Amino acid sequence: MKKRLLYLVLLTVFLIIIFVLVNNYYSLSFTPSDRIYQKVNNNGVASFEHGYLEYKEGIPFLYVKGDSYEIGLQYGVLLQNEMKRFYAEADSVFDAMLTTIYNKSPWYHKILIKIFTPFVMKRKIKSFIKRVPEEYLLQLKGMSEGSKVPLDKILSVTFGGDLQCSSFIKKHGDRIIHGRNADYEMPFIGKYPLISHYNKNGKYSYIDIGIIGTPFVCTGINEHGLTLSWSQATYKPIKGTGTMLIFNKIMEECRNLKDVNEISKNVDRFVMMIGSMDDRSGAAYDIVNNEIVKTNMKENIIYATNRCLSQNMRKKYNSISDMDWTNIAREEKYKEFLCQGNEFNIKNAVDILSNTDFYNYRGKLIPYRGWETINNQNTLSSVILDPKFNTIYFAYNTHFAGLSKWIKYNYKNNKVFVYRKEDVRLTSTFLSEFLKIKQQLRNLDWEDKVEVKQFALMIEQASFNNSWTLHVLWLLYNSLGDFDKAEKAINKIIELYPDLELGYDDMGDLYKNQKKYDDAIKYFKKALEAPISDDESRAYIYEQLALIYHEIGDETELRNYGQKALNLYKSYWVPEYLEKNVNRMEKLLKNKN
Image (tube, rainbow, N blue to C red; front, side, top):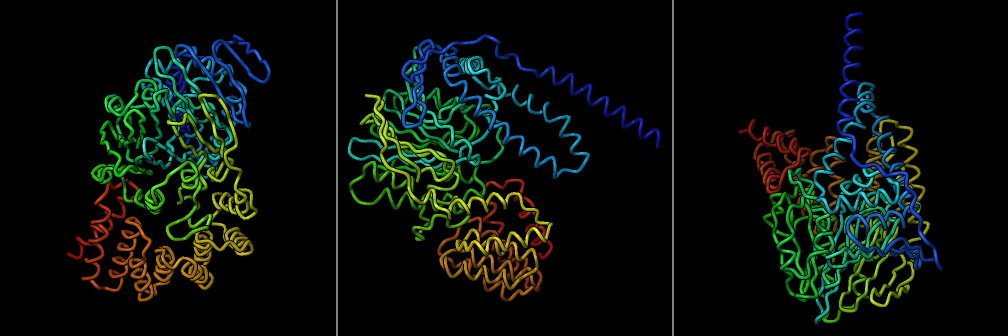
């Protein structure tokens, strides 16, 4: 016993020594100085060197000019207070996430988390530094110096996550209208809008319609009317060394699609939408692991969601989960709205980006998980770029940004107006209560039956009759073993959403759990016949049918549905979490053969 204790102590000391050595090795080479930079305030406008900051309609408009370090320094000095607030909130969100993981971990994992988390983070930051081109690293160092926000925090945002978005470009006559919704699962980001004007020495000037503290271009337009938006393309692990700052480079060095073709390399995994006034056209670029496929505009429109446009790239880099309702529904809506009639104007574009319809279910703000529509719970900013008339339209919020107040900004004459007032639905009691329930669900302890039952009763009393809450309700009652109430919730889904596969699928699961196999088969087959479905759902249903037929000893139908499930799963890239499904089906079919 004493020996084991001694070994444990020696091992702990050894790990601490290694941690300290490696931690020092990975320490950052840049730390903000103690120097104080003074900005001048005059009639509501703050200035520093060649940069200045002013607020219009409650939105900060930033103008910076100089070399890479100078524009970063101006950014940091002028937005010092705003950046500190942004990063303080980002830290609190990250700490809350880490605390949740820590609390759910066994004691020995907690020790490892405490010891190695700082080391892992610093190692990641060090790898980020290697990936940033020198000119942009100077810009980030300037931001850090001016704001006194440590460089590692700025880098963690630069590489911290991917926007899950949708975009469209519509050509009407000689006019290019480029719209996009930026979706992200950190809602606090929507509270930090920023319109930044960059005028770097020797580069094209451009405007970034983005977020305070984020140095990369999410949505932008440059002096030649080149417009850009990007979104996540795939979750597949990649080995690329790209950086999102490539989008800044495109804004600074490209004036048309030919220029973009030459420069759009060394980016990890994005769909990039480009509109060009120079070409009177637009295109989408699937960029994954240094492989690039360009899709040109057809019939004056092009649109993209969170998956590759190229079918070959989809099969290679998108999993079947990327083929869910989220992306399919958005594409269907884009096609429907962009192909209507001959006229197309800004009002049409705003209507598209603020739309919450789901297939033929119109006017239902929350059709399913709360984020399947073009404008959804995670939409933090909506932007329309209209280069012919030197105008940008934008809206920000912590959810459903397209329903928020729209601002019209003419960047030639620097005039700002309210284009459209906030939609009343955004402040409805229904929406606020729904969002509260979603947050409570994230923190629900499914092992605590009392807590689960109380949560189910709360949803029932709130009378939320939409498919998301009803779907959650059946899961809650199913976990409690109250199958009658679970069935009642599912029947309500089928009544309200008869075209959706969801209700029939849920009923199939409910009966399968109770070993009522005939009823389960009937509802799973109804789910396959539903007009609104997707490949992910179909593969799951094929798999469930194969497992049921295995249980009842029908080998012919087992092979039939098992092979269909395998074929559908394998028609896309298979991520690690789905490998077990594929392996299970392969093993089942192999044993029967």
